[in-house]
Length: 400
Image 1 (cartoon, helix red, strand yellow):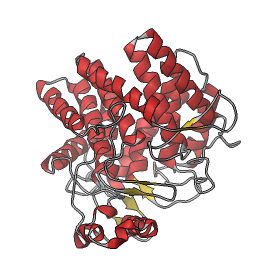
Image 2 (tube, helix red, strand yellow):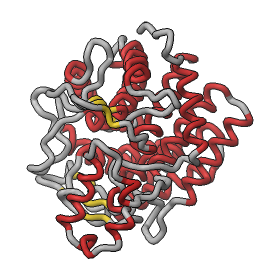
Image 3 (spheres, one colour):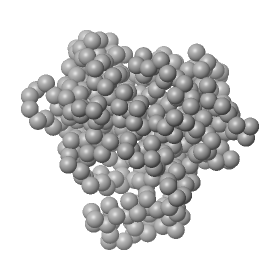
Image 4 (cartoon, one colour):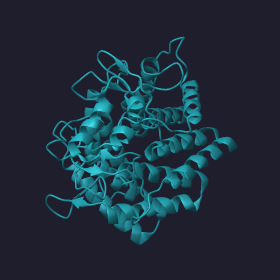
């Protein structure tokens, strides 16, 4: 078990302090990608330029100084952040089972329901900012599979915890969005395809396609409807096949299939491993991802973590250390313990390293530790929500 310094809080104290810090701000805050919410940028003609949107997003994201107050970027709630807070609260409820923790969890789920985007075949959630990357532009309010999948996961876990049929039906509605609104791309045969990130694009991002597949497989298993479950399972297996077949010889996965998506990073690899594991468990043996999981896990475990728990962002570079990578790794390790008897110990080691190196004395966590400086901006979705979820899951696992 990792040693804890005299000045370092316990995991439970860090969880409590962070939850309180987020509550006081009503779970609203800044985001690495919210630069286009700048009131100054939105008032200028530059908002119509793809190049300007891309530059503005990256400039605000990468700046060592927080430019958001100067650029008048408001602090807001983010639906993926709220989904993660709900998942953290659900984990906390399962551990302590009090009336207070149930009430807090249900309030977060109610908030998530209010953030649902209408006008599509099923329930979907998006980001609270215009999204511009190298591949496509999605205006604020466009449903995206990543926040949608986390919302579905929160409602599935809520149904299991509270036996409230509303939550299961909301998760079931997400499947209609996945099946009818997301685009599909394929290279060869009917045995595989890749889901798009949103209804507006045709990008092939491995982790996001697997989020769609995971949602179908897990909701299908929970619903118990034979016809729907069979369709959901079949589609999920084909999407999983697409990703499994594109695993590299060393066990890694690139971010996506495009020429500009060939990097390998910590948390997206963790996403892939988690989704494949969940799809395999929920599909009733319809797909065997064991070999891909084992190869991918070995690459991830061996290449992304130093002996003291330092979580690297990229497999081939020491910096930056990123709190989001820490949190995702903790969650993944706890769920993938069947692959590694030492996973629990490593999860705790990463948590202790993060508490000692990326936590502010006021209770929140920093964004990144770079070679010559630390970016201390307390991003609500990217860092605080993920760390709260990770700490909650670790405490739950330790109490089991």
